Amino acid sequence: MANILAVETSCDETSAAVVRDGRYVVSNVTSTQEAIHRRYGGIVPEVASREHLLTIVPVVEEAVEQAGGWPAIDAIATVYGPGLAGSLLVGVNVCKGVALARDLPLLGINHLEGHVYANWIYDEASSGEPPEFPVLALIVSGGHSELVLMRDHGNYQLIGQTRDDAAGEAFDKTARLLGLGYPGGPAIQEAAEGYPHPSPLPAGEGTVRLPRAWLPGTHDFSFSGLKTAVLRLVNSEHPRDDGWTAGVAAEFQRAVVEVLVGKTAGAAEELGVRSVALAGGVAANKLLREELERALQLPFHCPRLWLCTDNAAMSAAAGYFHLLRGDISGLDLDVIPGLKLAA
Ligand code: KG4
Ligand code: ZN
Image (cartoon, rainbow, N blue to C red):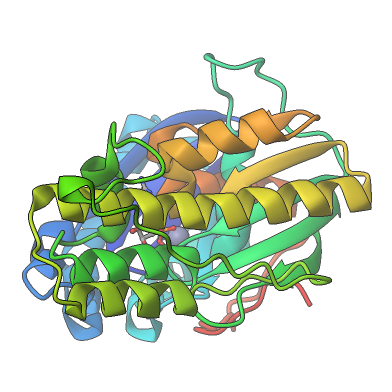
């Protein structure tokens, strides 16, 4: 049995968690900065790192205390990239200090790997079994959109990726264009809720239709054209009201989901994988979860909602498998803001 303490400060959540055997959440404490950054309509990196500095020690102490104190901790996992340099530095330096002072193995975790391992955390609402290898992971977050093949633990092969905006970034930018606020994903989902498809414009003026970039012959994505098309709609002469905004939000969400589902189902079939796992903040999207489940002919895993957006529990789960295979980091571990998961 091994309890892994993980610390996650890659973006705007200060989070610490203890997870047993890569599966069972013992504690998870997160301090979110969402309300602070909402005032600016996005994340301000300098503000984020200062907030991490203020909250990291009490957050880590709380997570450890809930797990039974320091003697219960067997190793410490730290997210060293990708993310904001100033934010990552706070978590990594705290973890290095703890590893040295308490003589604990240090495990360097890729943030995207953490997102994928959210699927290994036990969920009493599902079958309880973790994904079976080979796994095709669709990682969709604020900074990344990637299809990654996992043949085994720690083994990642890039199958496809976005050529411009990440899916979450497209949600955030479109929400801003529509005046729906930050973060954009939940705001668009809520505005689109219950809206029929295809989305009618008010007063029977036809339907909203946005482009889908299929990029045939590749497993890549592109979302920037979609954002430009929304901008064109926003700048058009059309009178705007709540119904119009809901219609555009619904069509935008539908366009993103159709492409993500179509590409994932196509790659899964071509690669002959045994399961598909959804990961990253956009994995919280209800339509995406439902449509993927419907389209796939094989076992489909998605984390519980609180495990989709940034949290340390997912990184602790990933850390357990690093420990199992002896993948221990040195105290010279440095942050890598542009760290890649797979090539
Ligand atoms: O993984 P995450 O918490 O942070 C990064 O690593 O980037 O992902 C944040 C992203 C944001 O772009 C946010 O708008 C999006 O996830 N997101 C959603 C939903 N909840 C969060 N996108 C679509 N639908 C949602 N329900
Ligand atoms: Zn993330």
